[in-house]
Length: 364
Figure 1 (spheres, rainbow, N blue to C red):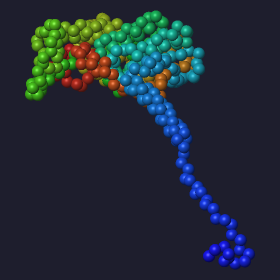
Figure 2: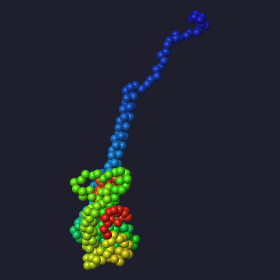
Figure 3: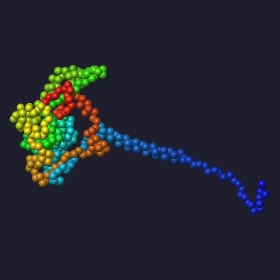
Figure 4: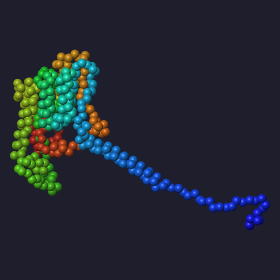
């Protein structure tokens, strides 16, 4: 049909081609900007995660500078909050290794408080099976030095276990009357020295493993777990134990006047045996059976204080960043390679232990 054949009055507009709208995609610039933002966000998150991971690893490794330099903070314990005079409780908890760390910081803080005139007496709270000879003696030495320098009384309060090195450190109270208290359920004593030794020679032989160390002298490798101990080695170790045992008994004599007058009585008790509080009192190893409150009362009496104006505080470590990230006990449970290697070396212990010294040396 042509245009002439349309009905009259019909007027049609010319038909023209309309362009079809194109589907628009984000241009390369917008796409690259979005990708850049994602990469930047991932980098920021990665850096933050890396920082957090490194702080956690430092905490677990026990080498966080912030925690190493942790300060001591006071926690109110009893009697009058804000009292004019102060008594501080210093705590020895768990096995004694080197005597430094938190315990040494407690002593430093106590000395400063005493020099400032606020601290009037100390209660030493001991709950320990003992530990190394050197660590126990380190604590004992610095406590004695603190008492001698500040001239303030020190009273001992024994917890559930104050044995061997724990008893050794308790002698820092000196020979004043009624200064060593033990709870009714306390176990104490265990006066003696031990160098643990275990021989795995037979087991290693079954596995086909030989001891093949190269040393400058045959005694350099004495005490090796890979071979039986020789009589020569045993005699040398026994001499080390004997000297440490004499040192232990001398420390007891400084704190227990009874045994200075009667050394034979101490020899009779120093068998490595653990004593109950009642047995320890009967034998003169402690003065009184009582709780920490009784030790505090005695400290007040020795210092000549008014109980109605005394604040008793307990020293606690101020948590560092690692402790906040990992929990308050992060550092105490940290894996310490140096200490693990140190434990493999023959060492003498003032330690109450149930581990059998197989093939080793023990001296009551």
